[in-house]
Amino acid sequence: MNDSLVVESLHEHLTDKKVQKAIEIQSEIRAYLGKFFREHGFIEVPPVIISPITDPLNHPVLDPSIDYYGMKYGLTKSMIFHKQILAKELGSIFTFSPNIRLETPEKEKTGRHLSEFTQIDVEKRNASREDMMSLVEDLMVGLTRHVKESRAGDLKILGRELKVPQKPFRAFRFLDAEKEYGKDFEAVLSSKMKDPFWIIDIPLENREFYDMESDSQPGVLRDMDLIYPEGFGEGLSGGEREFLQDRIKERIRKKGQSEEQFKWILAYSSKGLTPSAGFGIGIERLTRYICGLKRIEDTHPFPKTPGKLSL
Ligand code: AMP
Ligand code: MG
Image (cartoon, rainbow, N blue to C red; front, side):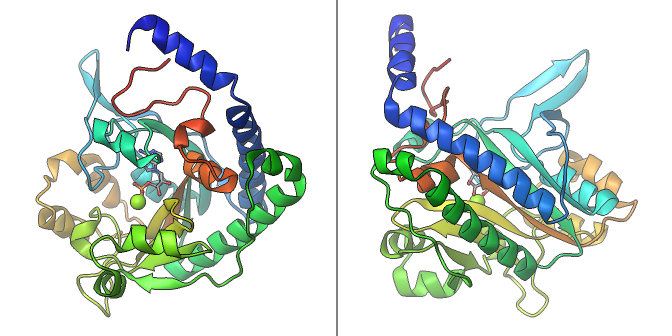
């Protein structure tokens, strides 16, 4: 894209009524999220943007690094390790965490990937996956109800009929869902369902090393994804975390990763990490679902579409 087109398309984007309404609703969503977690005893902590440790992720993205007078920093892909440390030291924490994930250009097609986005990232000491699922369900019920009431006019302009879900949400075990609906089960179920639902018990090889393996079902993790209905796809990932140094090392080995890459988290784990569980919700994806938008770009004033230059 030439330079004038970059500016033209940004101007068109920012003057689009639909985009303006989505940004206003996102502001309401952010306020609700902050209030909700504070009221549930979570402390808001500032985000970490540069660090020698970040999420390895389970899919390939470019890995930018900053050479700062000989010290090597990466850009945060998620604050998973910082959250685990803070859960140990502070208890219950949340943060609005900017993530940089330089996704491959074909991710543009999904309508739900940006290279820069914000997660509300949450972690709680001694919590179980089920505690976190229940908390998220309360959040989704309360948030959809609140937006429907406070932003009824805006939702109307967007043509969005938003349904308030009911607790408990349905949960599908990963392997059962795969057996019944095939490899593409997440997309199939997301299109079919009318309410948000869970995918739980994800096989070990499908996720990063830090999620806790089930004692009773070796090979599957004590984790979960929240999937939005109506085809909007994944909105949240989370789970219980591995906290014992030997087991962390073992899981790093199983992933074929090097201890060197995670030496800082391994060093901190010798201080004794504690059990914790948590999750991250992409705010742009949540806004897209609430507003019923085709593309995630419409939720962000300066969207970074994979493979496209933007301001
Ligand atoms: P993850 O733990 O990798 O699943 O990331 C947590 C959440 O962040 C996801 O469930 C999404 O809501 C959001 N997310 C992840 N990657 C992206 C992306 N490239 N663009 C927008 N949101 C994302
Ligand atoms: Mg995920």
